[in-house]
Image (cartoon, rainbow, N blue to C red; front, side, top):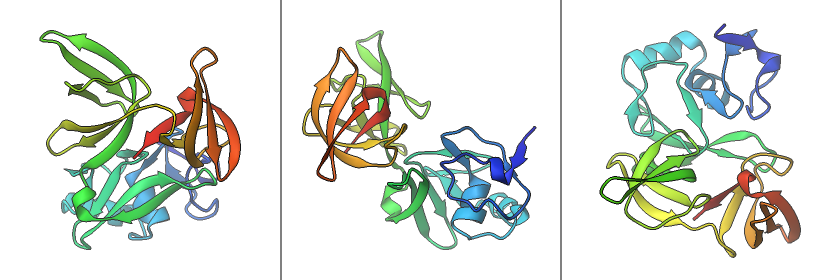
Length: 213
């Protein structure tokens, strides 16, 4: 089934529980383009309007044309509405909800993603597995739990954002989802991070943290 009742939508979605009876089915950490355009940004009134915009090649996600209104956006993806010349990045609020923030058009193909795995290929090239499902090659030394700044147009890693004490971070899941702060300590054995968020000490699991610029 490709639909679910609106009142059963994932908690991350900033959508009213009343409205059209059904919304597009999605993963817990994703939000479909139709929901972004209709229910969050309010650019379209109906699913039909979204489909028409996609048919007319007016919508891009991370710089690529969207082919289906059910296309799933993930954290830090961008969406561009070509006729309006506007680009938005999907982030998290401090209340743990997805949010769309307008960004300069030049950032449409830029994205930060967390490294969740890596392996060495022939020719001593490192293949990185990222939290959004992408894989990228990198010649720059990096570790699992670092983040990368991607240039999706050029298909390359532009910058490594190290997982280290003093780094800026955002909590991407769990009780403190959406909160931002700095890493003050790392316990590899317990797989925990000691962080400072708004002047308070907060302990979170390493897997719940993503490094930011």
